[in-house]
Length: 66
Image (cartoon, rainbow, N blue to C red; front, top):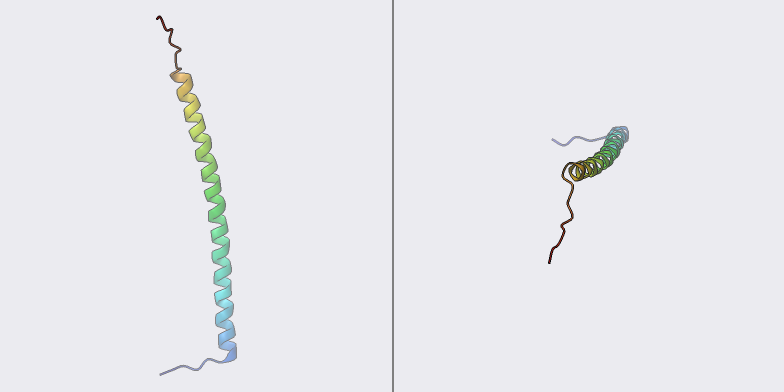
């Protein structure tokens, strides 16, 4: 059995699909922004850990006696 769609049915289907695509676009935009925030936080955390390690374990200069 094949169903026959009216023009109004097809327009409603396309409208719902467009709403769904717009909603997915909004979610992807939010996820992209969150990813940028996470990358920024990770970079800052990495820098802070590096600074902390350098303060905790300073490298010494060796006196060479030749």
